[in-house]
Length: 335
Image (cartoon, rainbow, N blue to C red; front, side, top):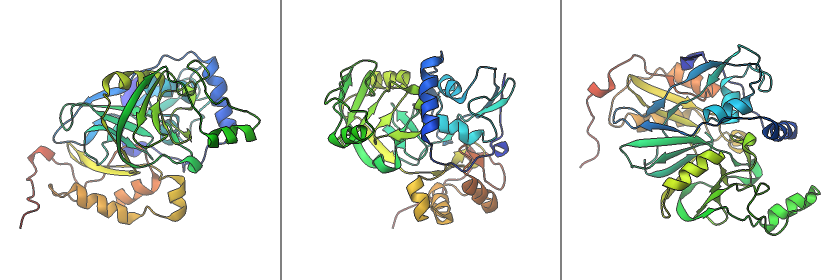
């Protein structure tokens, strides 16, 4: 059973770094559980809306875990933890309502090629450019000490059944744990790249699959972008060499829905929380950008609350609901 959930009903925990015990349990469960995966969702872009999808609630069955549900609904493990702070991720319990956070504000970036929003742990693929379709997939990103880079690049090569050539830094890390790596890991079940890899123009970085899908949707990589096996297979088939890839850092996204402005807030990257880089000033910047062509009144109290809590799903923050398609367009630019 499922129903649409009002995003305001969702509570979020204050995200913390994953410890080794959780990662160990994920690895064990990945080998034990039979999971029927879902491919990344496809949505049709609208000229009047930056919001896609819908939040759902399902009722857990006895054998459900967040690992199983993440794979089944094509969301990340951390996305589920964020949206369900009061639920045990390992034993939700028969009949427990679980929020499936599958509604999104599109990142503020040119809708061309691949757009990766690093703190959101999510990839968006625009095969038709500004019009047509968008696909979205959960991802894993680099740990704090192996941060995923930002900026614009492109896919420079594609490899099916890739071999992995671990750099010396990673080999040293494994050796320190008494887990030595060979110079070359051939294709197969022990290869962490999985079956497909897209090499980026940033040296040493890939978008690739995984041989451990249970850890999908967390900060666990050495900087590369990791995807579910079925997601990278689909992306691999559609993405040509030379396609643009844009990596952005947008923990807060403000965009137009069909009835007003929606704010989606994620917890900023840990290293930026420590520096206090993200503040209410960023909310003002988002508002200026979103209302450059259309006017809107925002409930600042609601917006600041959403921002401080880090809901992880779009929340309505306009003062009143309107028909966005009927709003006059404000002239910008010119002499």
